[in-house]
Length: 210
Image 1 (cartoon, rainbow, N blue to C red):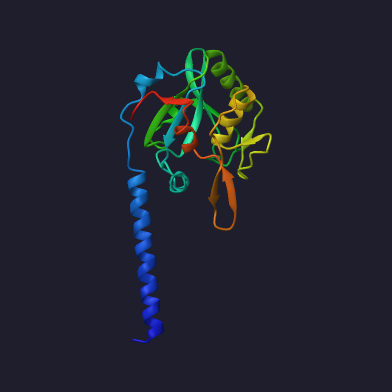
Image 2: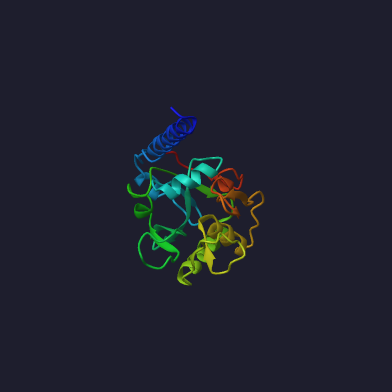
């Protein structure tokens, strides 16, 4: 066999091996299952952060660049008429506009969207937590959209962690230790606040396990 043919075969084998490894890791990543979240519904309060580990390739990509790798998305709890809802920024799952979403916890943690979850409570006074939730609600009512540019300077476009960061900031809370990380998209680098920044921050305490 010619040397060029040998190199071609080796290259194909390596690419196939990488593809198999990627698929295997993705299957493991997306194979989890939420056992039960009903008990936590009555415990949720304004300003709680609710994290989920998604099942999509986009979620897998987030966990590949996030050092914690536990969760790929996060939303903020808002109580309406005593019932918990989640406000969060996510790319459109249909052909509609990418508006900030307000949905029931049951929808946010549906089997199709989540394989694991956790709730973290901010260690601030009730008045502050209520204010944070009200600001997040204003983002939703103002029809802010998802920030595909991942630009913290944008005013009416937000990605998931940016929404939370700015809701606290506008409530007068500067979350020390919450900083963007450099994420390499191959052709460009972005400074993005990853979910792990909140998971490791002492201002938030985990209140449940899944």
